[in-house]
Length: 342
Image (cartoon, rainbow, N blue to C red; front, side, top):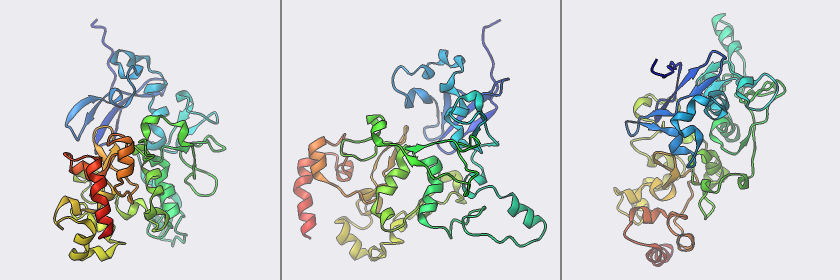
């Protein structure tokens, strides 16, 4: 009599930063509610109003009950948040044609389908395998394969071509994971990039890391710094291996800076200060994670006065000026040459 339609919450999506809620309709389609809970700010938010451009129809609460493709879980979320997503008619992301095996990010998303492994264990039989055979042993695979598995979800530019059976986030041909081609960056919205060419949004996190010298020459992977199975996961939302001692991430390779004298000479800051933390200069918080600023994963990002002078701090953010906010690019231009001479 009130005119209200009640929809049950059948699924929750996410837990660390944001938790979304979805309902399953009688026809099998799943739609995500616009109101979500942000754990970081501890408040309810209209998530789509935050991430979409002004005027987005799905950000309007009165539009949600249209239940179209823009609110579809299968079309927008499932490619990363389900196991074995496929289009039963061959290709595309039409919600009515999509089905998945299990909701959520399960073990096989990263380690691969491991029924044979489980069967061998239950029968007490040895299970001979290569490192890339499921379940994948990440400690024994190469950096390229490691990054490719992470890129299944963390690479915005991935071209998601369906497999022969309509597979969209897994492969039945050879290895279980897909090796995605990348879309040209020119096809993306300008707002995803700074004018100096760096990535502005965290959806390009893998692309950012792949550009770094640490990746190209040092074979750094996501697992060099992150542990998806961290024992303190509930209080460590970024899954950092060295949360309390972040410099250790870099000292794994750059061990000479374990010496405090060498560190002070390198950073030109007091050893205990924020200016001497590796990430402060080389991974400044300049990537938009929607509700907070995340660190760039370019890593070898070195403060550059020329680009900031040309484009301004808004379009070429400089790590030095993130701390020295009372200064400007002209001050930076005068300071950096003296550093290079030392």
